[in-house]
Image (cartoon, rainbow, N blue to C red; front, side, top):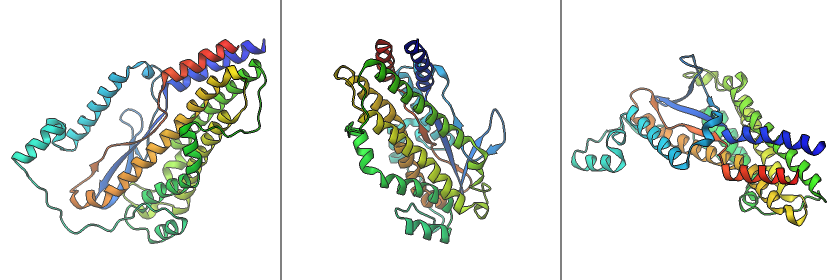
Length: 320
């Protein structure tokens, strides 16, 4: 009976992961002050971070369909910003600029805004100086610094390197139970990311949209650290799945569970890299902006991998 109980438990876990989790940070600029905003509900009030959970059926879309949707959203964003690529496409916009260039002249010199830093000492200086846009530069700087501290472990996760953990599973029953429990851990961590990013406390640390003085530097650093605490728990989970000793005929399940638990780490990596790019763009965008300018969103999401989920589910069923 215990076998069947575990097997029934794993199916909803996998179904929940198939939809993925996406967190969007819509970035706007008003002069040199970066404003991060979101729409809450349908026509609701503005807040700072926009969070969206994919519908359960989202994983059913073909890869081609998802690519087309992404391209359509990108072109719509360009059009909304007045970018010629939204009307003519990337190649067409380049031709139009060659035929009828209309350069926009900046209003002045490059603005001195906060930049992403890479050491704790530089972060202290950033939080002390509090240049324009400091709160978002500080937030992503914490992510960058924390990620650098586990970079070697992240490389091991990407290549699937196995470092024995000392845990050992001797039969199919133990293997099925172990990896079912690890999938439950994975699901709980994904949900925790969602809970943290949606919390009022997470939104409030950045202060009022156009009032950087209302932001709390200590709370910003703590919130970023808590997000990276979850990142490190994903890394711990991936290492535990890859490091356990299993029977020879279960090594494929160990490999696939290691890959599955590594997907959120990929999402964090993309989120951090994209956020760094947005902060780097702030000075130039602020020079040219005559009002609020909306840039492309920064996404923290768990990528869908239907084939991987199917393989894990099937192997657990076979072992059960």
